[in-house]
Length: 409
Image (tube, rainbow, N blue to C red; front, side):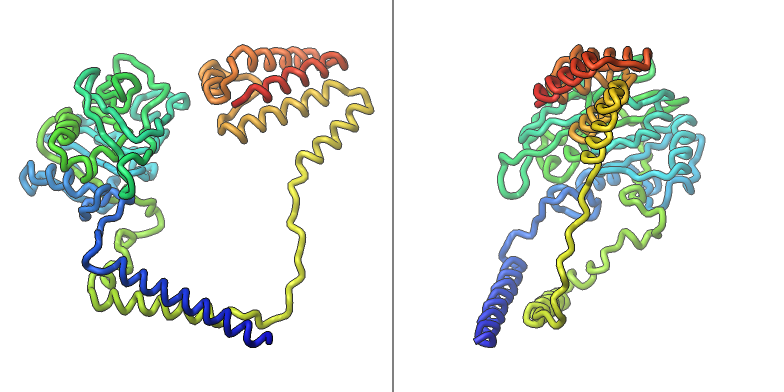
């Protein structure tokens, strides 16, 4: 009886494997759409969210000797100090070593320019480029299907996101938040004429250009002549016609060489015969694993997972302090738990002595007015300065924290 059940199970698994092989063959047949919609920013690919078009447009706009396509670290680059060169990076995120950053800073200081369009910030580079602390500068984003990017305040272009399944899909559109406005920083582009998504900062004789929406420079959008005008006006800020396109910074290859850029399956999948052989081999391996997945050892006893006892430990310690009538110690524990909960939930590092910008961010995230949080901090700091608290103080602060937590969205 048991053997029959196992045979039925193996038959079902074998049938599923055959169906999977059929689907694999079907979806890799010549008659179907070959596009994928991953945001890979590859200059050699013509997929929707790669950068083949913008790369070749810039490359073909100048002489061959004036365009450098580099897969080597920028720290090794030696430039001609008598000519103006424009460095370009377009991708999800640029990975720079400390030596790369120093070289970029010296490069711009000597009168060259750096254009970086990425979705994530390199705060170390931003600090050094602007010559100030950028801890209050970070990327916010809008989650929407439609995005309006403006050059200046009024020259605006509308972009709609498509994930390959629906042209009403939504994505994140980053913009800069907390960006100072002074003589060394110039706002060049905005979202809906409001938040800044493109700016430049003076460094020595040259400029750093920072753009937060590389998606707008991909093939999908540049096939539209109107959207191409947006990209054209972005690069119109770069002087001269000599360019350095950095491919090395696309991946974190601090421990790898240039071979990290090569897909080990690229050659196999580019050949139709090898491609079919690869898929059949993978399918047979999966089928073998499924049909030989019967347990061949005695049952392993179940072990209870370790539990996080931090909260229970804190409650126990609190009870001990309460029995000792040490209300001040309980207030300290209660405040630590409160600040830890805020950080865990909203990912905003909050301290007992906080600056106005962070309190404002917290209010925006929680939906609770700034004054409520400041009141809790002021009360706590008052008890701390006296190194003493009564039972009435403990009850009052507990109620304030509890009301704050209940009001958070």
